[in-house]
Every structure is written in C-alpha cells, then in structure tokens.
Length: 110
Image (tube, rainbow, N blue to C red; front, top):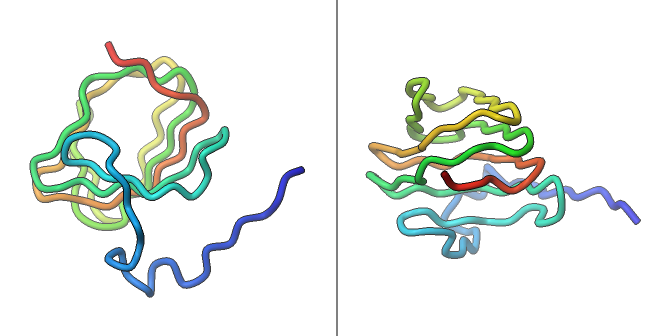
C-alpha cells in the first residue's frame, strides 16, 4: 500500500534537529524514503566527496544549502541537478552542503 509522507516544517526546524546517519566518509544521510525511488537529505562536510559513479536510473538533486561540484560545474543553493540514467560523475563539496536527493535506482561505482 502506498502512503503519502509529509515531513512538516522540515526546513524551518533546521538541519541540526534531524538525525543524520553515516552514509560514507564525510557524508551523512537522513532518509525520507528508503524504497524505490529513494529520497533523502545528504549532508556533506567541507571537502567531502563521492567517487565516480554511473546512474542506472534517474537522479535528481536540489541543493538546499552550500555548493556541490561535479564534472559539469558547481551547483549552488537553489540549483536543481538532473542526472539521467547512463550518466557518470564524481561529486564533492568544497564548503559543505545539504542536498535533497532522489534516486530511481542505486548507482554503480566505476
């Protein structure tokens, strides 16, 4: 059974009140939806990175705070990044960031 999820006042309450978990070195995750499509907040520490990977399905990223850099340039607060299936990139954040991310399918590290 599909059920609507509403996270009320998520942004006004600030990021510090959310219980982020370890995702990978320098990157923590707050799961909104763990089933497909997966939806989460990622919190990058300054200088953190995610190695090169290929998208098996659509990935959509909304930068909520800070900067996120990949092969195509820098996405800043308010920028939307859409990575179609078949695309590859490595990701890092120079200053740290918080992004809302949606994955249609898990990525494949290359």
